[in-house]
Image 1 (tube, rainbow, N blue to C red):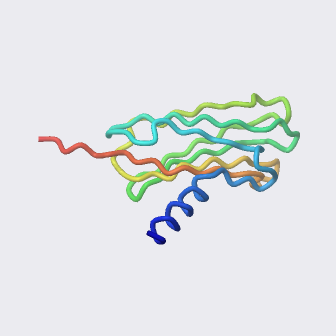
Image 2 (cartoon, helix red, strand yellow):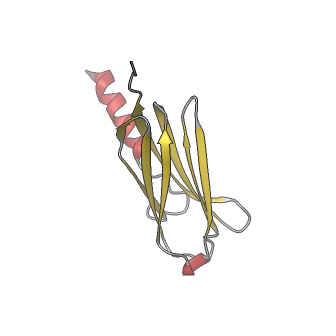
Length: 123
């Protein structure tokens, strides 16, 4: 029972956004959290307006698959929300990471989610 409680607590901590410069600087939602392959994932990020915001990088990675996207941002004039779509992902457990970067390509904030895409056996 203690192990289950400990693992549940660790999972909650790992699923929380990891802000390097404030808890609300970057947030991310990924939908769906579980899907059947081939799956389309929608990633929505929200960033706090700041002059340092110059890019947001999104990656979706499993043991057998990798896809990424980078969008430039115009500091405090950039839209607060951005939406990314990863299409036709094969089965696997994916780590989806959003990284907010400054003009020197250094990370300002990061958010991470785990997503499961279930492979369907074809006959």
